[in-house]
Length: 405
Ligand SMILES: NC(=O)c1ccc[n+]([C@@H]2O[C@H](COP(=O)([O-])OP(=O)(O)OC[C@H]3O[C@@H](n4cnc5c(N)ncnc54)[C@H](OP(=O)(O)O)[C@@H]3O)[C@@H](O)[C@H]2O)c1
Image (cartoon, rainbow, N blue to C red; front, top):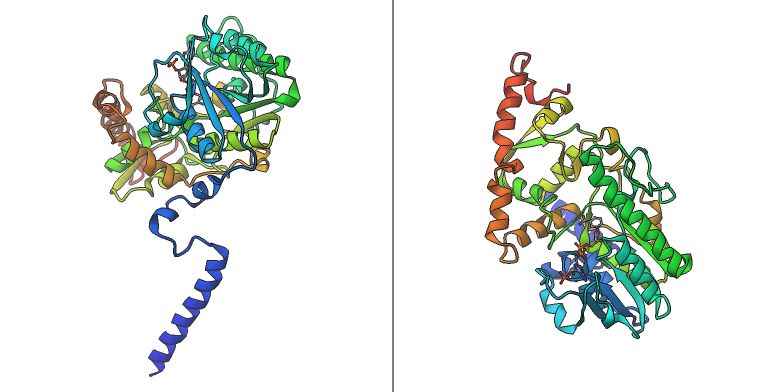
């Protein structure tokens, strides 16, 4: 009897707390689908004003997600491309897009004499292209939004890299080929930003600097390594030290936020990185693994010298945080968050990437390259773990793979 009473009391308590929780979290009790990503559902409500948007590029990774969201918000979209790249995600939204054809190298005719509220320049990967587009559009478009990159901060030497950090504007002499690649991209992006501001003025320019973007449609196979590797389970190499900082962001968070920034006409320069709080490499990997129920045994390799000898300098989002890369994942996001940047929970992103990567949107050849390509980390992983065990065996005493150097 007493037990029954107890049970009833606790059930009542549960119902009462359910009501309180229901008031706090209005999505509780909705069908599973609606719960899959409540933030994304909320953010897709129509905007108060419909914008005419031109996207330079728009058919690869970031663009399709911007388009899907913008259409849901009631905006209209034109894209400008050569018509070569076919989208592999959000394909069905392109029937509602005006697709203008030309070439940023030598044929911008389709953009002449047209008016838009906003241009989003995703494909601005040459300074000349950005300069010419900004000059061509400045009298016919109100706002220029340029997709830049945290690459402008290379070399990443700071502990807390804010938007007012001065980017390098000229590739220095006497650098290594690796440094050249990094400088070349960062300097191009930084000068492109300036050419937008010079044509449109500060009050009509929005510069967004994303860190590594991940998500469905990613062509780079960088971050995608982790969802695929963790889903497979078994012995998983975990490079780096526990608190090595990592930053990344779901492409859809960037895409949707860019549209909202434009709606609010929020001119300015913004870093775009996640997660919401400082995260170390181990926390990232454990969090990503929460998307799956595969059994894994992590083999931690916190020895930079060993990793360097094995040519494991990065496993994005992890980049060995030394030298020019010390601050690559120490980018400050306060300004972005204060202006509406939000984050999809990591396990949701990881699950979505895994589903997309194993769907027909990705070719067998692409999958094979990551899973078994000669230089692929997945191919090399077993040997690296074996070498690590050999190296740490003499002083092992039960702590071999955990030991920092
Ligand atoms: N991925 C990341 O993690 C990351 C991080 C930071 C910043 N970013 C930046 O994010 C931006 C968005 O990248 P994204 O992956 O969505 O792809 P994107 O750079 O917008 O993709 C290329 C687009 O440009 C078009 N294009 C290529 N050559 C062209 C030409 N000569 N004339 C006209 N259009 C041309 C392509 O279509 P056609 O082939 O049909 O012409 C395609 O739509 C890029 O600027 C990148 O630097 C990316």
